[in-house]
Length: 186
Image (cartoon, rainbow, N blue to C red; front, side, top):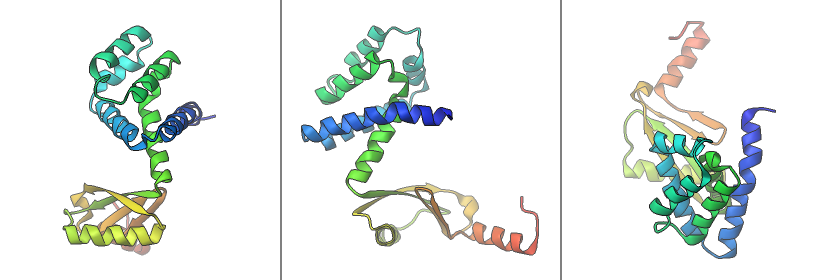
């Protein structure tokens, strides 16, 4: 079994339990905001990730850290969940648990996450049109677009929705033409 499959088996129940608790107490949006805050903290601090993943750091130290930094910033149930994750020795998986929770929220709200890579920023009209097209294609209630700029595309765009990729970039077209002609690409 691959490492990622093992981690997924470990983290999925935590994310599901957190969502179940949030639904039970009708605080799904609040907990989602808390999880977003926690995820941002983790993604912006490698020192925090190392601290949480370090097995030599006592659980009480990790609890104290969260008590001092997040206890007043997040909902008490989210805080209790963090303490539970620490007690169970899974705090090193917190980032993955948070990501899985957000994925569950997207499924719950029938929201599709789409990454759009363009050579230049899109206008608000183009963003709205793209949003509507993706909404129709995916039958989603909502679409959350994440934009990235890659000037190497020259023009056009690439859309990533889950495992599906739509490459309508000039670079992609040139590469396909090159492959068709049997040219080596750089």
